[in-house]
Image 1 (cartoon, protein in one colour):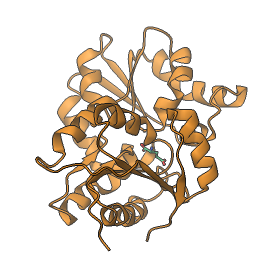
Image 2 (cartoon, rainbow, N blue to C red):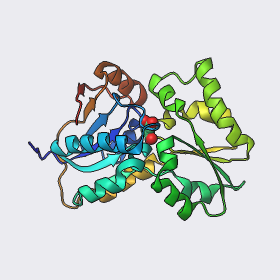
Image 3 (cartoon, rainbow, N blue to C red):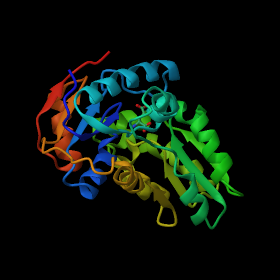
Length: 263
Ligand code: DGL
């Protein structure tokens, strides 16, 4: 049964969306959030888009039933697979999606070379194609599909020697090709940014679109709708205990996480 809690629904395949959620909490501290981590189906990136779309559609229904007034697809792969579709299915609900931040990278590059670290679904999606057509301008864009980085971010240990070697394998070729901007086009990657920055060096700027996404959430919140006073709520389709641990570790939030498996 639908409950009118008037809150912000946020979804991701796992902990990645927390890199967006932390900015939503900062920007809209009085708007309760409802976060869903689909860890049973992680990673989304290598899956066919239709499969990811089915998961995201079910989670969207779950969030709407619990009073989400705005839905944030805090996942580039989920956005690539489902954003246009969900907007068609729910014309009254504002959806905010992630799109690779090529525009600010193209504006800032001095070398004319931009690296984009991402996953397969995002790289192959129409959303990314459109973003490149509109915003790449004269910049040369190097798209680096880095699926293991999602698993490394989920593990919470980017600095083991093995994991650093893997991260280096993806980042170094971009820097060697002259990239001075690296777009983090997967919401998991900001949790690796210290390691990525160390490998890339100080001449490279990492671009995380999360603050801009949080500003967009504030813009699309329905005018005149009072946010409810519900607490921030967390669900995972994986293991709630380990999700809770990551919540504390990554964004400093101590909260209970529930288990749910929509669909
Ligand atoms: N956080 C998701 C994204 O932004 C991770 C993708 C995945 O699960 O592979 O694309």
